[in-house]
Image (cartoon, rainbow, N blue to C red; front, side, top):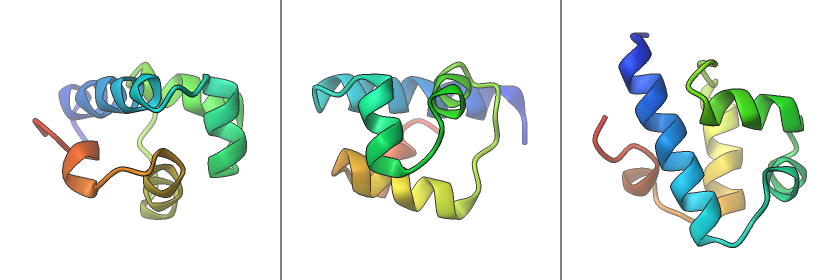
Length: 71
């Protein structure tokens, strides 16, 4: 995957997390992934699996359209 889509996904995650009033730590707990992984995702440094994207979407209470906006 190219770097730009990963950065855009990271920005979307950050925006959605902040809108939901969650810290990175709280999101990691709700999505059952590590805090470090959440940090790397928001920084555009990791390419998440589909299973991780499903957990993040559920934890954030958002749509896939919101998660993938501008990709």
